[in-house]
Amino acid sequence: MSDSLKLVAFCGSLRKASFNRLSLQAFIERVPAGTSVQTIEIGDWPLYDADIQAKGFPDKVQAAQKAMLEADGIVLVSPEYNYGISGVLKNAIDWLSRTTPQPFATKPIALFGASMGLLGTARAQYQLRQTLVFLDGRPLNKPEVMIGQAQNKFTDGKLTDEATGKMLSDLGVALALAVRQAKAAAAVK
Image 1 (cartoon, rainbow, N blue to C red):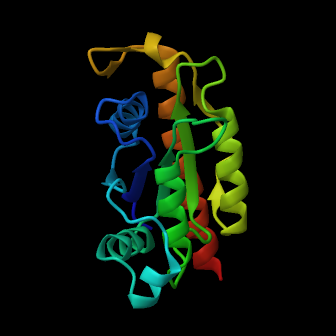
Image 2 (cartoon, one colour; image 1 turned 180 degrees about the vertical axis):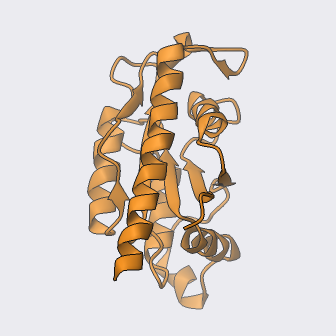
Image 3 (tube, helix red, strand yellow; image 1 turned 90 degrees about the vertical axis):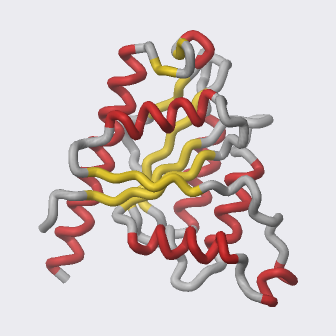
């Protein structure tokens, strides 16, 4: 079994310098050796519409599905808007969930997010977990990474809070372990 891991990541924030994009970059900088992360941009996808789907999936949706199917695991990063996940991330999930094969099924998935509030993105992550269970995804239970008061944890676009950096690093290790366990279980079948 190869030690290299291939991940795909989606950021549910469109702003280039958002705390969620900065958090994703900090996560990528801390993944275990041998891990590659492909970030998939979703901000210019059309709103999900069955009429568009009937004419064929947009190229970017098809490319994302292909990348996900080839990946070992998935990373979802979402801000929390009005106690929920961002519309752009939900839209991407809605598009991808309708492709065949559906790319979330049985994939280990790391979730995290950053906000200026005390709770980080706890409520948004709860909604993501509910959606991923329906899609047969495998969201990691631990560690939970909810980066609260993000405005105090970054300086000049870089994560400076050591505790948050450790949580992101631990999440990368946990995702790598979940991927290896999934590969081992698939090899036994």
